[in-house]
Image (cartoon, rainbow, N blue to C red):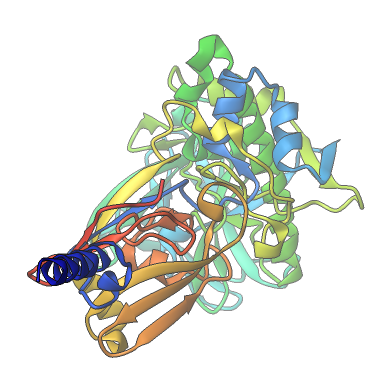
Length: 459
């Protein structure tokens, strides 16, 4: 009897151990209400990485040429002369162009005095109105009706306001043109006033669109501080300037590449002013400088010191020199839509980078809402990675196990990651510590209330 009791006790202990240590316990339980996601980097990881560039400059003492050669390894340094470009000002899409200046300016040869407002509108192809106005709430009176406009090389017509001083390098706001933006839902309401270097024009292209004609090097003064903090130039006793100079060359290269693509598609403008191209906010907003003065001397110096420098591919073509915030430790390979080979990004782990490693909590219910076919979520498994970096690299396939069915989420690249997009994750490089991956050591314990507790997790 003693032997039998010991045998039964041993069997019960074995069963308990199996229940506690066997991973199948997790398969029959629901996922936690709050699911933790650990991740690396921020953005697509293609090309130059801004935090990595700063890390290489400040911690590794690299020059901007070394930084560029690292991220754009299949390119070399070259030069291209300055030129006029046209920037699509998207904030004024399908709206009249209201322009003013503290100094006199002209619209197609028609004189406006300092402080007057010109209101430009398109009636259709080859027909524009030039009015003098008091602002957003005033349509004004006609100065020239049915102006035929001028032809652009793209075959479209436009009219243009030109400042008295055509030198777009001046930092005196009184000499620059100012775009008055009106509210879309209430066009009589003024939203902002923004100064631009160069001229401002209106093009008719199945609607009316505003553009800024400006020298490329002056345009870059407005781009670089929007894409990389100007304060970085002072870090490391000034070593951070190397990161800003690398950014300036990347931005110049990107512009020349996207300009050629847009021209091939018949666009009148070379680029736009949003993240779809490069962020460009002009010289000032409501009188506050955006590309000059004590806050922006570093970015201006970065543009000037690298003037006309770009990267070119070995066949002489200009690559789309994409850049992003933080790679997490490895950049994205060419197989995943990058124009450049993947590289280890040791600079990314600079101590002040908040995106090198990150954590976010998501709701189980949000996952179930995104994938209702699974029923209630049991677990999330990363079943495929790209093989580059910690944890096996960027996530390329997920398995969502639910009470009704299982769903596989295939992820070919950063843009094609519905899980990342739907849940607002910083990058496509992530893992779920509450759900150890198949290669991870660890075990699960099922709680009496049906919840799941991870006792052993991935390291």
